[in-house]
Length: 415
Image (cartoon, rainbow, N blue to C red):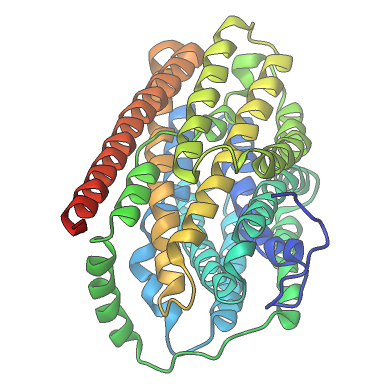
């Protein structure tokens, strides 16, 4: 699948890259939470254990926001929900940075803000899945992930620089305005009509739909892949707060977390069109996890210097961005076309991926408490390799059973 920069969606009318760039808002939040916030708190001499806990809590809505997602599929259009959730998230983030001196309140506000940012991503995902064709899914997955990663890298630099250079009363509102810029694309995007059912009907239908969906083997396999820590590369989020372990200054961490992450994100995303035909998507996802874990183990051989920190953060981001691109392609494939609960289903897929991303941040923290950076490397790689091996055996077993049933069915129908 060659990546064509100016390909227009045959249904949406806009270039596919522009559709994908609407996800940059969510990427900006990611960069703020996992790069800028840990670095800023570290500069304020907040204990690393507190930073890990706050970061894990702040990104946790990615794992449980789907409980509220049914409301995104009823009453109003997904464009309307995308705008409203983006505005609420931006306002709450602004208030959070105005209270950065109160770590507890700061953390609570970030959690609620990121909850609405996740609802934005879900509404947007459901919206995009309804205005593209099946053959455009993989290309859109690349651009959605490029937006996520590049937005995160850009805000990792911008947020840190603004908060340190300007009074909080000025920096916080500026950040809130910046994250809303992608909404300027919305007026040119096709917006399917809203479902006028009541939200209460949607929740009832949602749980019935979940039960029905969970009977599909391909959905169960996708959820298993995402919930297991096979290819989350949450070490990226953990490394952001370990600059001191590598004798790296806060400014160096901000710049590498910004420019470096943008470059790494683009590299990882652009790898996908080169490898997506080599293996089925689910096997490709596990392969990325295995190769990336090998890279993590190689880092054990390097000294703890700023250069090594840059290599580790950039390298892990390459694998994470490729992994996210593959998982996004799997998610669009699972949602399918003309799904009345597209936003809900998309949110369920993304939430499954974020469950592992959340708890692995804590696991990597345990590794750091055990043996510092070495412990984090060992724990992260060992868990990923173990999960990938078990999931590969599961996929192979299911494949053999499917072939056996096919042979049996053929022999039964033969004269």
